[in-house]
Image (cartoon, rainbow, N blue to C red):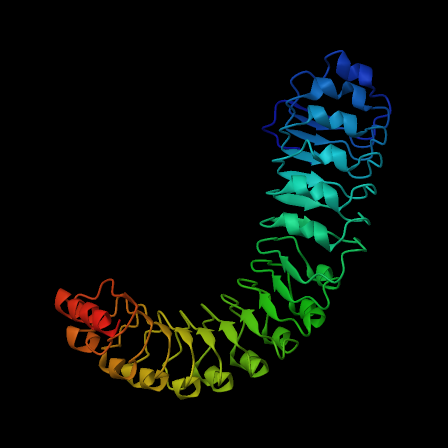
Length: 381
């Protein structure tokens, strides 16, 4: 803690019984930016007036510290105050804008304190037994959260932990029955965590590199799932997802056409950059509402014929698409054909009534066809 060799204004007095308020008031700590005084039990709040402007402070286990000290800690970057049992919610009102905070074992801290912690980056609050689910509402966007042994955090309905790199499987044991969970880029999460997620409605585990097909066996009946960039996922996992409403498999490079056989009736599907997809199984996607198949280089017009009635289609950079299939896309609302170089004006003419059309890099499309679509839309209205 605070051992950066570049820090020239640094002092450490771990568990030092000899350090007293007098040492601070005499100016011994003047100009200190990084102070480590864990379990220095003779230090009280009286000396904190001399610590104004400090950057990092560890005062864990300093039992005599009270809320009065915190008026002098405004603007502090990192504060460890675990086991400071006299600290109450009032103290945290002075910590707006803090980056890293450890309140583990501060038994008097309750949900009310968390309104002051919006925007915090890292929070350790293990064994804070008065804190409940309601506190988490204020932690949107947090990077790292430790809530082990917070016994009243149960029955959470929605939790967003994306990018909390230190979250492990053990946290999931407290989340049984949760409705919505985003733990994308939580790189320590493994298949074991999914045992606790049976019955979940919406789950995001994007870029969770340890997850394999076995994890999805626990997600039967799920409504919405994001497994984008989970590179270990294969076709075998999709067998468990029959009946799913929305599935994002962006960048899952092991997925092939065989996976789509299990997705009949799906509403929204993302297979962008699933480079083994050729479209031979698109017959199983009849009735789909939204499909993102950008960067699926081998999909041809023949596959798109099966998507008649689709609302939104992204074919960005699908280089084999010529537009011959557009006659089957009458009534489409939104279409992205950026970098589909083979599409011509003749194909575009079939898109009467379209509302949103992306044609970046389509060099064979001219103003003539776009003018035609504009006038066709005006006539319809």
